[in-house]
Image (cartoon, rainbow, N blue to C red):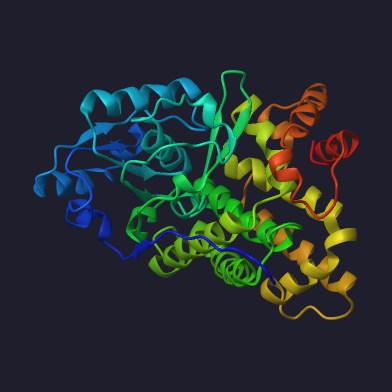
Length: 381
């Protein structure tokens, strides 16, 4: 029963809070850089927050060139922009890519370390600049994790894990997620469910606090994701999804993810498939692969997503997997690699790349070999 649990010190969950951003952060920073992407600006989501910062007297620089699966060169550009602005704080506004980029800018803008120096676990030295994160999707949980994932110069997804990456404050405004397109709602929501499931089955750092968070997250997400997809303006569903994604983030920040993520990374790194969609594609084959070793935990999670399930652990494990596949299918996301232009010729390289994700594969309840990875990719081809 020995464990350590880390968390963000300040969490604000309130509709409309993004339009109060200036008042929320002015005690921490006066010359912030706000990192976001052009799509959010065009959607009108950034303007209220930006106006709030200016109304509070802050000299803010908006950097709107964040890219999906943040490429290393783009992260370095953002660090340079922060330095040129003489920023004294960093705000990440957007999905996982904006928040992950913001974390790296905050730890590197005043550091002599390079981006490559901090690849891996616990490599950050020195202080971090004040950091505030605002998610606009209900998925990554990045606003409450010490993790950043970038795409290296060699097109590999690289994880950076260090407690320095925890923000000072997470501001969650459900209004920012209203009207998200169905495919984004689905993919990011499935990503969050994967976080909860894999946190619950981690073989090294599973703990009672993460377990409780994972169960509550999975309950909120599994019962609201289809409603959020079909009724994008449903405030109650959006609140539940955003809260569920945050709780799942807290769970996997302390009990990290496993093979679904390890298998998903090559899809993002090689083919630039969005992270949430990559996870949704690999969820079923990994659940079935893990079942012989994780039947008891999956049976416990069946009590959350399929409370009517009865019988042995094996029976309830099957009910859990069946229910998860049912939910994923109902969201309408792509279910086959061929739908994304991936052919059987690509699978060996993907399996080789998946084997490099030892950071997460080591947490999986069942050891994954190259042949296992190739078989699972083939299963969803």
